[in-house]
Image (tube, rainbow, N blue to C red; front, side):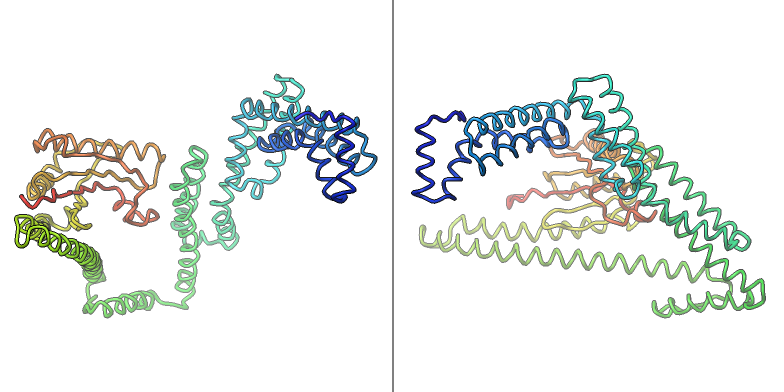
Amino acid sequence: MSCKLNFVQLFVIATCMFSSGISSAQDELHKAFFEDVDAALAEANEVDAKLFSPRNYGRGTKAYGAAKANLSGDRNAQILRDKTAEAVSHFSAAKKSSELAKTILSQVLKSRQDAFNARANELSKLTWDKANQDFASAIRYLERGDLKNTKRKDITATNLYREAELNAIKAQYLTETRRMLEDANKQKISRYAPFTLNKAKQLLSDAERELEESRYDTDYPRSLTQQANYEAKHAFYLADIVRSVRYKDLTVEKLILQWEEALQHIAEAADIVPTMSHGHEQLRIKLVTYIENTQNELQNLRNELENLKQDINASNLRIADMEEEIRTLDKQLGGATAERSILVQRLEAQARVTAQFEQVEIIFTKNEARVFREGNNIILRLVGLNFDSSQSTIKQDNFKLLAKVEKAIDVFPRSEIMIEGHTDSYGDDSLNQKLSQSRAESLQKYMINTMRIRSYRVIATGYGETNPVANNETAAGRAKNRRIDIVIKPKFDPSI
């Protein structure tokens, strides 16, 4: 829309001021003169021109303000036209400059966002502010067309943002543990618990090294820092005990009896006789076995409960559907039919899946596989299938377990088989995904070539670290997350 208004248009607007009131007339004037400039301003804001082209955006804002002032003052049509046209020109230039900046300064923009995500603006404010100054300089040079200095400031700002990001990550993960170790030095903890304190220092050093080498995989260094934090606290605790023993406030015998008393309480809660006449090792084995068996029983109960719920829901739905089908068939055909017989066969097929599951369940020991159901699907969690670190080759040691897997698959003829590879959270996310996919595919090839299973029945998928089943913060939890799951999907066909 053009901002050029003739005398007749201005006369119409002026007439509106008296016939419809001042407010509506103001709206008409704003619409007449500011439609183009408002659109240009909106487009500039959409590309963040205030940040990426501050000079052009500022000039446009100044011209826009002058036009607005004239609109509410003398209402000089020529000045309004000039100022709004000037504002449109500057906002348009700001838009183009911003789009160019986002292309040329893409590297520094990414490093700036990464630093912000790490809270560098809070945790490394001095470096963040310096980076912002160089970033602003790069934008100013770009607006002037000085590409040489733009590139120079781009590189400087990028490096500063990366430095601020690393400082922020270190602050989040390392600061508390460093403070604890400083306190430990002040309190001379190394005199009483040197081994534990040195272990904390080494873990902290390892965490810092890992952050330097790969700041975007924080899972491992964060875990190292947590371990360092734990060992530092442990050193304080041990130092207190050693002091007590050294200065005769506590004898070694009493200390051992205190620890044994704690084990006795745990054993009694587990209904185990706490015999420790030859030390605590036998009791430890009994307690670990008790806990593992209890966890397995609890998991089995949970699986049974979930399967029962699913079976009940599925049965209710199937019964309702079958009853409706039977009523429909009775109406159409007047009595028992071959279709009714098929419905009965479907129920029998459901019972057959349950029996087959029980048959598979007894094939494996608890150290080889966990077997459970999800609806009609059978899941084999191969806890006994191990790969070498970062490798996907199936080892000969696993052949015996895989022979049992083949036996389990044979229980479900014509079933679809899903092989799911999983890793823990340590290491690069994309590498974990590739490793899990490679391991799943290795097992897929083994099934096709050795077990002679048709290729169209077997699908391999790697999920990397995205589907953990245990806590990645513990070694035992990470071991559980490094796994292969085989999902057997029975062919639900009443004819088999």
